[in-house]
Length: 522
Image (tube, rainbow, N blue to C red):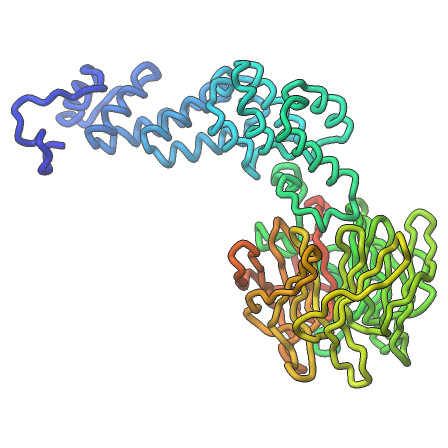
């Protein structure tokens, strides 16, 4: 103020508003003695004065003092004060304290006096430390009841409560019974979203539901599980999980056998692996289930036909095995597995025998795209759709690029087909997207690397593609991530082992079942 070209530097008398005179005196004394007395009674006023007059040493000393005095009752006030005075370190540490001690903080008067924007900032955090999501909702209701006029903002608050992670009984008995929820259409839509997630367990991969992302404090993380595959003809039995947030790999229970060219699907938190090719080149009929609670694989009823290079998909509670190679020829047969009866049954065959197709389920329909149909293994642009209600197959618009050995996934109501191989293009980096509403395919941005036989999964609204082959003698260990909003790809990590023919799914997994990171077993 006085050492620059501001007008105050040329005045004999300057009025300093908003600062207590006593604090000015303390700062003048500090300039001569290098000493200042900080107490609970004067720390905020002293910090404000030091901040205004740019006495940084006193300002930082006040911040350290306030941090030492922080508790559940005053941490919210300290945070808001630090934010108002641009004390970034104190602002962050006080927010960390609020998030860590939320179960006690939300019952304090300071918390109940928060504005709606600051409240939503707090409860939106992935690092909010709560034993269960019901605690967050109870905090929101307590805040609401403090001032009835807040009802008009409650939908904004409820948007940041992760309703899909709440017990369905609590959702029905407590949340839906509140008048503020009953009377608000936006709140009702959030309830409907949560119900879809809780009821349609097999369609969770189709539902883009950011509110289903687990908070880090719950001990659960949404990870990508990779199973089997091969690296330079070495067939693997390793099973790992990749956390995209921490970029860390951890080992899970290995398969009882090495396998590649298999299928893998997820239902709720259970994995099903079917078919594949053993190291001796023979096709497998076997079906195995992974139980994350015990980190173990359990053998289930085998398929009726041995299949490698099959398509496997979970559709409305049933597992469908499509096409594949039985050792001598391609298959057009399709069989369906009922987890409740542990039985397989044949259903309507596909229109054309196919190996290495890309298969997904979307809105109650089974989509089979591409795959190898000719003797030389060349890919097709064919897209077939199966309706289980009518047991019929129909063709939809063909892809723009014929391909086999592609990966496929669904995101926001659309189907993405990624990579693959065709004689005219060889291994490809091309990606295309199918919109069922318009029956049209559109090209997306290409990947950074060409990939044949990669794995793919969706986590938090982003597509992750892992491994695959660049050429016949090069196996990828890289991971690419696709952002649909910007239509861009970036390489975000590496696998412990380069491989192709792996299978991937996204899964919410408890962190305590992981073994220590290490090199997977072959």
